[in-house]
Image 1: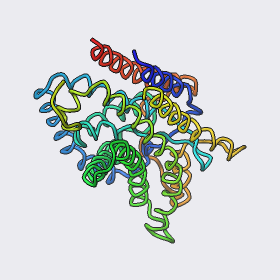
Image 2 (image 1 turned 30 degrees about the horizontal axis):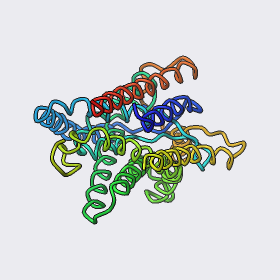
Image 3 (image 1 turned 45 degrees about the horizontal axis):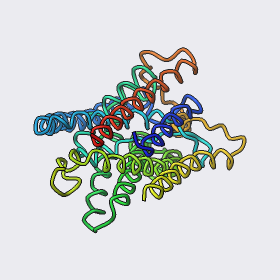
Length: 247
Length: 94
């Protein structure tokens, strides 16, 4: 096992012990009025179904990718368990969906995101079933699409791999929480200041807190991506991430 | 070449740790509660009459049990990542 991987493992285990307290950031159970719960859920269902098919197709094309997909899912598991302190004096956690979106595309991540959100809402009382649709939309659909688009754009502009991966993961993470702030403001416009007033308030809570965390997620995603580039060349080639013939 | 890579990786890891530690130093005395709890308060500010219409089916009985489950989540994820990277790097050496 090479040294780089060892460092990565030490890092990951370090972070597993870094949880400060038992809160975090998805929309809480019961905190979206029913009409919004149902609407966000309805938006998500077709996208998650497309995701299932997209995963099925990729895996039947190349069964070896199963392991890599499991790894991308595991990355989401780790990062969304890490509640980190932030500059605002509160805690939130990264999402981890950027890596998988870059590798497998945004649709595949909608499925993995739902699995993680279900785990957290059923076992951890974090997020909730009535808010599952809204949380899925922000973390498993909006975030991955932004990450995927940013990655493609930076690559198109001939940006370096690390830059494309970093900005994709960081902006995807940040955008997830911007969407959360939008969702809450739509459901709870302020009686005096209206939607914009609420938006400013929720953005202050979610988005500002998230900035340093988004940077952390970007860096961690670059570390993993580099390890994959070194060790999983063939898989990355078959996903069209790297060019060149198989070794 | 190899040393340079290790140096870069270590610096990146250091940066991530700094990003978590600096906020702790900047906000001495802050509560570091969750952003979702603060959103709950903000909702109550905006609409004091709002009643959450659903409760979690099951809540961890204490902060300890909750942190156990969160650690479990991270541990499972880290295990899978470690297994995968170990496997592919071994394969590459062969």
